[in-house]
Length: 274
Figure 1 (cartoon, helix red, strand yellow):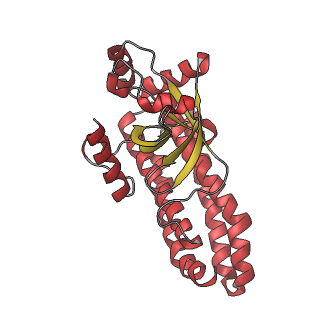
Figure 2 (cartoon, helix red, strand yellow):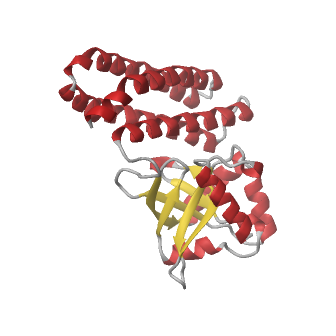
Figure 3 (spheres, one colour):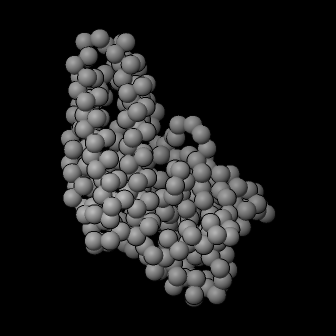
């Protein structure tokens, strides 16, 4: 199992988070914990679920084994962990959920994928549910060493997340599970935050350095408004239990065009000026 985990870790890092075989298309991250006894760093691949407020949730299934996984015991002893999502890497604080909160999150996971319930039955134990809250501050990652690289990496993270959401929505049929609603809304909130940060931070900085780009920035701000309208339509469809896939497709189509054009216009500027 240790050798297999290391193979997955190596493939994950070499392919910027894309892993084949049984993990193809799965929500996967690398979790590095500090050994409860040894104090050494240990990295394992784990499945995750988006949660409210920017948290991620991991479940200590250990493949249905009768004992909690070692990484769980480690983070209980040392709650500060390190997370790699293939594009970004950041520290996070781990909190073991209990009571009604744990049960609600686990029920949400089971509704989306009955495999979690199968793992719990096989294990004969109550699977621990852990929330990971990113430590405030910009994430790092391999190759994210300039404003231009940061921008394109953020864009790639949205492309990947929306592709995952689209596949999940398509597979779900007409009715979304509670977890899939969270997945969709989490992506929407992330996009809103990113565009708000661009409007209030990056764009004014570029405008000050390059006044000749006023028309480019004006168009990008207008496109942010179009994307915001599409996000609102998607959120309304989710809340009304209406057809969601057409709204996801419309958002992805418009967002892809926006991201591509923004990169064409701004990456050379960011490389030259900042």
